[in-house]
Image (cartoon, rainbow, N blue to C red; front, top):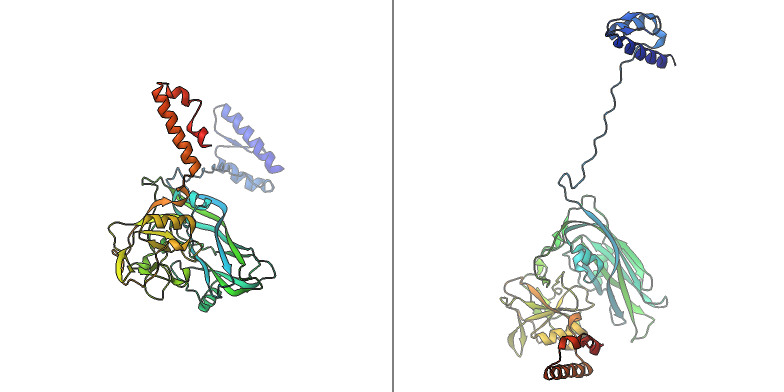
Length: 424
């Protein structure tokens, strides 16, 4: 209380003295006047020690400088996207042996076609994961026997061959988990605090993917009829950071390439698909099918016209021109075709009878070693016109001819009778 009173009186006295045009300092306790503050402080300390002495004026606190925004400083603004998508559905039956690799999915948002994740991430150039949680939901009842394993590998280019060894390899992954075939399972991809930015497009999976998610059948199915099947549905709960907004200046059709480790592939077959009776692509005998990570389902791709890829038919070589993603297969591999019609039918139906039959491997590697495949048509856009629609279109054409003969203003009539009303 003494100190507060001391300062208030001192301030008042100084103001009074300044008002008289003098610069002086008065002791508030004994009214002695000093010409300097230093003299006043010495007097107060010597004569009035209990008062605590005169305190120097405190410097006013400096206001905090507002932080610059990311945009003001020139840094790239990042965004956090969140969502949940179904990224795959896989069918199993009693014929599937334990150790079968059900799926192996490199983790890149644009690889999960027809999902919200792919559409939103496609507007940016770079990404890195904040949370990636895979959840498997099974259609099997609790009476069905069997199990499945799932795991995450840090190497997106690592290929998993079906067989008992696949069970061992996936079990050794960290993280990995095993579940009864009727039980749901979840696996969360570990986050790396030093995770670098990854590109959303590119040929090198190491620069575009955050590892690989693998599903393997741990024990064969039992306690179901031979005609019964079960389905494993894979959900992805995701949260990703993105930056580098981009607007594509190219055509909307996509271009795909094989993984770089499989450059120089050739035509052959695999027992894992269509019992080895249909043609696909491999790098070497006994290896796995060639993955095309960014290939979309139900889409026809045409091989670059400058490329040369052959298959064996009648003991001779013939040219491969088209490819379609094999549905419900462990990796994104292509079935190959010599003509567009067969490729389109396979894309629409998934019926392997439209695929080229396997008559032997063609050892001639593709030239160049990793050519481009261009999207030419999406099966969802292909629509067959039925007989009724053909009849309606013919009637519309007849009406148009009659209107021209009668010299009736076609615009006035079409405002009330449109082609859409007929086709509805």
